[in-house]
Length: 393
Ligand code: LMR
Image 1: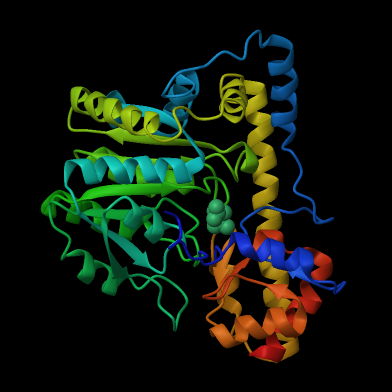
Image 2: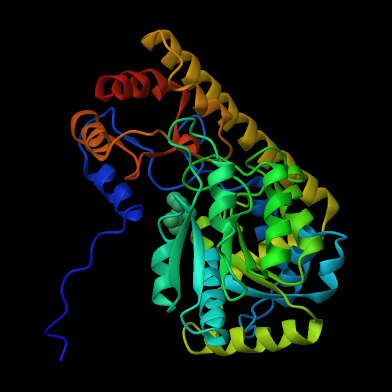
């Protein structure tokens, strides 16, 4: 027993932080895992979260269990925040999960329960943990064309041509906004076309919303999703509070199910809870309790929204500064696309040898496939990063 276990491969994202920490060079830069860092390289606790924490400390009277679906008040607040006054809200149910990864897994499990071995279509490229989670749940993964390696934007034509093959027993996973890893987002027209395809072909849209507020604005980032949500008969969502509430380690996420009827949604929810009970039982409470306090208080919500706005503006500013410096140093506009990308990440279109050279020769850690966490860069590092990138290009 246990003799045949071999060492697992290191996680392509999480292993980078450890590698960077172990690097003794003073100019090293960790642009791997998706966390926001300020001018000093810190990831501060969001101010509204600090206030909500004080409030929770004062008011909380027990640490007794909450329940399999976590904090139902949080589930309701999040559904109200995301779907707002959309009609599909009347059929929506939520389950709080340990981060959005937990939501990805339990939704994948319930899809596999309904249609064993169903195919889930992922964008090429997609978040490094999507395929492992889906495969572990028993689903088959297929890819649709997405990232155009020439323009570094979305290959809409290729995407639509591929999605025409997705059938009524298939699932199509879409990034709600701020595509991870590429930074290339669907346009509103793309959302409309995909919505039509979902209606015609009957596939289930699966929206992964992990960066709301880091793209154009809190409202604009969900415009495409909300359009789709109003037209299709069912969809599922995974939502992460890690980035926009800065709750990373608190593992605060949500799975939303919108079935054809509320009755169907509730039946699916009962299965999600059964799956949760068979794995982690219930999610950690702290982060969800804080989000709920914020979303139920107008002034705290405003406070939170303006902090997300300033994080977004700062990352946009970093993109522009980097593009300008790269232009100046290289004399060309090869990297201009970085300013067109949305959210925390950009895929630079460099080879794995160049990614390796960045870490080995320059102490700069980015994810394999060339994903750079723009939100982790500091103003003072732009020059060195640009020099290093051009040196390996
Ligand atoms: C990332 O993509 O860097 C984050 O979502 C962290 C993670 O869990 O992979």
